Amino acid sequence: MHKKNKVIHKRLKEVAGFLAGDHTWLREVLHPANDGLELPYSLAHARLERGTASLPHRLQKSDEAYFFLKGEGVLHIDEKKISVQAGDVALVPAGALQYLDNTGQGQLAFLCIVSPPWSVEDEAIEERQH
Image (tube, rainbow, N blue to C red; front, side):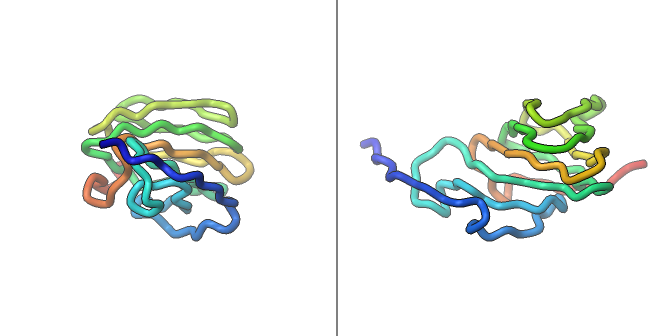
């Protein structure tokens, strides 16, 4: 039996933020486990301050789509380097090593859509290799 979802409305400034394991500042905007919803994805708002980067990590079972809202950066997916800016979308397939460098003059802000929904058990943080 399909459970009917409820209407949800949130203001970003009212959603608690935290420093995620990959060192991005994150706000879980919609998550089935947190909001009592039946969704095949989770949605988070993330940001990196000027001159910072997330830690290399893999989502082992989940695909992750990024929608960039503000700023400029370089998204590293396995051996690829992709320049990103506001208005860009990128998909990181499950299992790919990924991290993001903020190369712009200000904050880099983006949405993360993770399917199946993000879980701490699915994320593996790796050592940065330079």
